[in-house]
Image 1 (tube, rainbow, N blue to C red):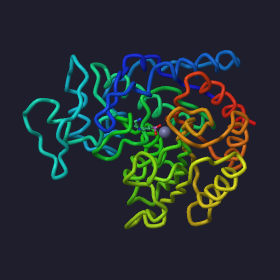
Image 2: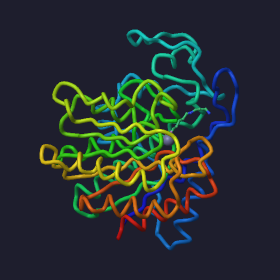
Image 3: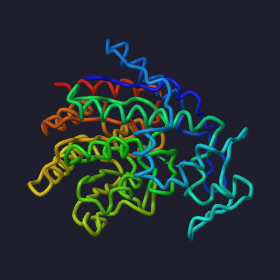
Length: 338
Ligand code: OKP
Ligand code: ZN
């Protein structure tokens, strides 16, 4: 097992998210990753730092194949000195207007939870680079198991609209890179629906996607995540959602996880690589969620995943109790390597 992490996640530290006009403390904070790194080191794992990324070559090519290049270029080139929030959301064709960056941002984003901070680009592109390196370690047969610990997360970042604390879709970077080497399955076990990943691969049959999450009637991202969303065109029947009620326990989650894995591994799919979008916000103590999974269960969850016997990249997504997220990750990582 190789564990990559991105020390420069500290560069991105949003203070506020705005919900229903209320300014709240932002949940996606650097302490999350600091707690995970400390717990992994205490458990004697070696972590390999991915310090920075140059936006060129393969990284740029992969990112611009999964995201609208206009969005990515804009994010890369827009420099802000203050947090940037959208004011007006463009629901039509992307228009590269010359107005205030707050207006331009309205082309590409969906909510008031995902501000652009002065150094968001550096942190986000480094996390994407680490995800690409993880995929390459599998593609080149140097490793069968790689975990990427960093932030910002990525699974709500779609082709051209980002949100939910996510800017670049790290899991999609890994999946798209590996899709050149074999069929890929993406399983999203974050508490929230992986709507960005679903969007990116919705019409593709070479990357199949599956998400287990809180029912969108109740939780973010609200406008996606129903079990009727099954893919389209060549991607028909290559997406599957498991929306769940509040209060899910270990005993209730396990058979759903097994159904998801059975669906991913069915003969029509035959994945050769597995990407896990791992959110630890399914934990019973999570401050923004309502599932009841226990710390010990993450070990069982990962052991169940390892039964697929596929080369696997784990990419960190959510998880907002900064006191227990590291312990939960250690349990997961130990279960995976079993
Ligand atoms: C990101 B990830 C305000 C509600 C805002 C946004 C949730 C984004 C989750 N209290 N919720 O999937 O963990
Ligand atoms: Zn989440």
